[in-house]
Length: 68
Image (tube, rainbow, N blue to C red; front, side, top):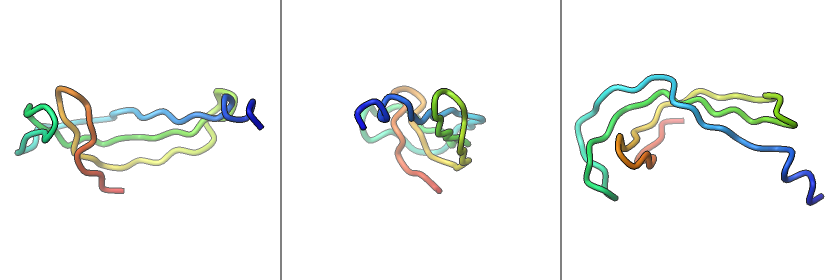
């Protein structure tokens, strides 16, 4: 069962982003709206992916709000 944890992972990738009004609550820099894509991989082969939109900080990369 321990080996199974190392065979499955998730990757997040920013497809597109554009500036948005507002600032990050953690670092105070500007925010942007990004189209994100999450892919779940098993043994480095993509098995499942999902596209969603999120408001992310353009400096520290933290996700401020997600629209799934």
